[in-house]
Length: 370
Image 1 (cartoon, rainbow, N blue to C red):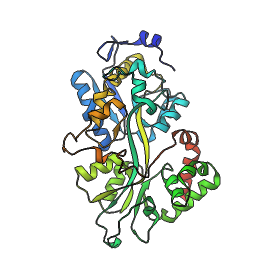
Image 2 (cartoon, rainbow, N blue to C red):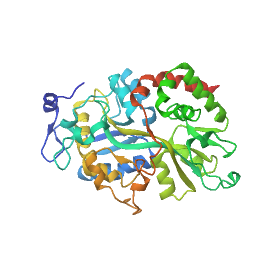
Image 3 (tube, helix red, strand yellow):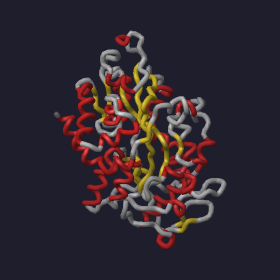
Image 4 (tube, rainbow, N blue to C red):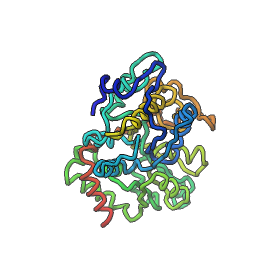
């Protein structure tokens, strides 16, 4: 479904100064996100300010973003869309868009321009990877390790292959219960060059090779489904090294003073943003569009980066980010894009995962169950 200027004119009226003027606008929204520190940054940066300006509106949160594709498929099948706005990764946005489960949008029609007048599509630039995707942040999946492991005898992990080096770094690992990132790291540590990762992973032999490498640590790995689980597992000392979102690690280290240190090597860049479920009633769509105009403007995305170490998706937001809103520390050194943190990083191939995700998911879950 394309939102053209004609269609927008029949459903909502975009007014000078931002937002949507409409007689029929829902007084509630169900927002879907990931929970934890990231969702808290959304609450602080733009949900609370929006609700202050719209006191008659209520927001309900659902922390089902990890299962967004499957759940939206089920809702569409049942013809019962209960979500209003869904936070997803770039690859999942592509899948939802391709399947007609997310609404295509004209970014320049529904989003605010930059303060200097630059249209939204130019301000977001390459972050717009799908016609249905409204970018918010750039982040990375990376690893961290405990700094107090006596069995390591002073050794310190310096590269991603420490995950597979159980002799030098004994102890439980914690990794996400899905193939993305784990398969790339496994091939990397089995000798496959960065530039050949997806070419190899596209073959049955390459997939088996990645799983065989993961087999070497499978029995020593605690598999997580929620990023909160990985942080808690490391904080409790059940695991000594493992993966999560860089912003989760920032929160654990800087805000909670956990004995953890970042292992930036081979961090996987990704982007995250909103999609609007296809087929919303006009009143709910009007409310969502009004909220999106506010929540994705230059200042709001800059404000979000003051609460979590994720880079804002708008180019115009970056100069407005300086220190943490509560801790007062400079945020730049904690960003995944900081030069010192990004020397050996790579960008996830969103289109590749959008094409192969379902098949490799099934194979990975079967391997886990063996």
